Each structure stands twice: as C-alpha cells, then as structure tokens.
Image (cartoon, rainbow, N blue to C red):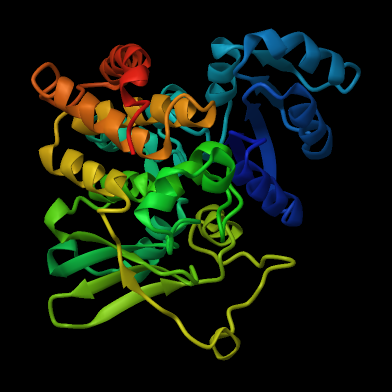
Length: 392
C-alpha cells in the first residue's frame, strides 16, 4: 500500500529533493498535494510531472497563472492562504514541511493539528513557537521527524539512548563562505559573497543565515525543542567537510555521530522511509579513505556574532527566539537589498531582542500569538533598519 505525501515548499531546494525521491520510489508513494510560494510556472511543471491531487500557491496573485498552466490537466489547484490550508487538510500520511521562514508556521501547525507525521524542515516553527508546537504535537498525536541534516543525524545517533544520559549534543557547521575571512573583510562582504555557500545549495536567505552562523543558532533552538534538552548541553563546532552532521557525547565518555555525504536527500529519505531505508539513485556513498581527513574547529563568535545572539536568546527563553527570528528575517532582507552591511544583521537582531525583552517575556501560548509577536517585531525592525546601516 502506497503512502500519501504532501509537500509544503515543493519548489524550494528541500521540496525538489523530496519530489526527486518520490519519483524514484513511485510505487511506494503517491503525491497528495504540492504547495509552492509564488512561482506558478515551477509549481505547474512539477505538478504535471508528479500528478498530485491538488496544487496550491501561497501567493494569491499568482493563482491565474497557475490555473492557466494547469488548464486541461485535471489537477485541481488554487492560490492564497485558504488554498494552502485546503492542501494541508487533504489526506496525507506524511507532510513534508519545507516552507522557509515564519511563513511556514501556520500551514505546518495546521498539519500538526490533524495528527499527521511531519517531516520538519521549517526550523522557524520551533524557533518561533517551539513550546506550543511540541505541546500540540503531543496533544494531537502528531509525529515530528527532523529533516535538517544535523537534527536527523542526531536523531539517528541517539538510537534508543536517553536524553538524561547525554553529556553534550553538538551540531556541526561548515563555517560558510567566510570561515577563513578576517572580520574586516567580512564587514565589507556583498550579498553575492555571503550567498556563495561552499557546501550546500539552498535559497538566498538560508545561505546568508549560514554565512552569519545565524542558521546554526536557529538549529540550536530547534534541537532544544526536538530533543527536550537544555541549552547548557548544546554546542556548535565548525566542520568544513560537512561529513559529520551531528555528535552526541554520552556521560560515560562514548561519542556517537551521524555521517553522510552532504546530500539533503539522505535525511529526507530517512524521514520518508518511516523506519525503512530507501535507496537513493545517483547518491554519493561516503568513502572515508577518499575523503582523507575530517577537521574541526571552534565557532568564532567574535567574527560571527549572530551565533552569540542566538545562544543568548535560547538562554533567555520566553519569546526571545520569536523576536530574534522576526528581526533576522527583516535584517537579512535589508542586507540583500544593500540597505545595511553584513554586520548590520547581528546589530539589528540584538537591538530587537533588547527592545522587546520586557514586552514579550513569556513564550507564545499558540501560533497566533507567535505570529502577532512576529508582526510587531517586523514592523519595528523595518523602521530600525537605517540605524543598523553603519554597523561594521
């Protein structure tokens, strides 16, 4: 019997890797719904190949273009928030949640409320509303499987181990394009330079988060919620080869690690398999003899202050991670359009966390409250962008 899979964020890098796997194992899976952002042509092309029960775009204005592109195909389609929620409501055994940013909160939570198995690639769901998400997952019987390569590796490395026996859980970072750059050179970096990730092919925003190490900070917060582990036992180490994705040091001195070639289809396949191992066509097997050496180095929070800011937000708790994420999304967008320099990102985010520390102390009770905080912080951050222009 085939499993039905819905893909949120189908036209992004995670979505494309997912549909590649679904096509490879067409006898095992069928596509329930495909959801994209605003690219009608890309979603239509994918829908014609995958033959889903429903296709939807988040951008309502792109609806006519999608309808025209799918005319005569017999594939029902729509656009706007209601269409996205309709896609989520359709029957599915697994929902791959790969919408980037806070925009993924509402559809991911809607799937969670239906008790679905969620292959989670939208880390912002746990950064912005982690307490509420995990509480509701338990309440509605939803199963959350981590798609991020680091968290998936950690889940596999844990096996049947207990969190109580973990001395330290470490996420690895490639170090991004600026790993060997001086602070002065990083300060003058362009958006194109920041987006040139040495290992992974991701979207512009995620690439820049990786360059600043904010992405690793977001992943620390995600790990805190996924594994119910305190911040003091979470760490980051730079590993340029991106072969080791996560390590668990146990209290008896043993260390287990998750290793794989840097290919997002590996963690996606682990989630889709639901306990079975799926073969990946055109995959690259790990050959340590060919790799030769694996190197590690500490993360430099002086050159990469976003990691320090994220650690502080995790330690502070409450709504600090929600505030941090909202400000970061505005700051990264401002950097991309040239409104602030690279270090203006960390400055703006830190200012936002300090500004709202008293106003938003407790963690959001639900997604609606998280989105309200998100909107409030975004509005403030947009006005604060000029103040971060001179950061360096």
